[in-house]
Image 1 (cartoon, one colour):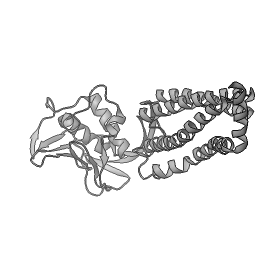
Image 2 (cartoon, one colour):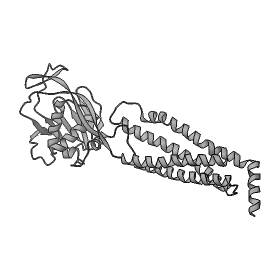
Image 3 (spheres, one colour):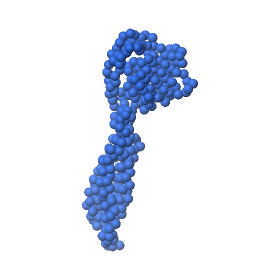
Image 4 (cartoon, helix red, strand yellow):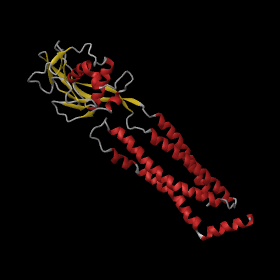
Length: 330
């Protein structure tokens, strides 16, 4: 048993030390982003009518110099975020761009020069949409995009309704293969939009990662205790018993805690993969439940030795052996 304690303590210590290093590396991935290609079918008009119109409660206004207007660089990031939540045609992008030019700060007051695309994505919810209307729910109100205009209605019922038309004419008789702009039929094209999105597959929580590191540190300490206790047992020291019981009492609840923490980590990671990048994907809870099976197997293997130690150390032969070691020391 002493040799087994030395061997198990050595492997457990190495595994725990690797877990600490792995947790530290995982912390570096928190907030990491990578370009993610989003393929969308968009209508690309050759020419647009030269008379864009913005109305507030039906009254025509000029977007230039609007106090709620948003700068071009910020408008581009917002449009990219909207395309991630739900792909829209380039015609509707133009309407949205004009709407943001007039009321962008009112729609997205939190956006500034340092705002990232995924931060905006997480604060937009796709509403009930059809082929005729792309619906989005914002924190400040509702956004509706059609081939004819972009409409923003604030949450306040008494607030003004802003409507923007970029000057693109969507006439009758347009087929799904094209749109009409100034009387010219333009076929749809396929383009790739590279959007900075959260690191795919992973949404890493600082809290769970920090707890994982702490769990591995405690496990490393218990492994050292078991290793020393194994050496004492080989050298016939009566102090082996106390160290083994410390290991048992600490290791069993720690393994249970580590398994639960592993499930939380999987659920968090897969939640970041499914939403909002892949709407309608399999439930992150179901996927994480399947992925936790290897962790359960490792937990059972890890618990085998401390559970076996309970029966061994509680046996009459172990008690007699311990008493025999204590007598010469008295």
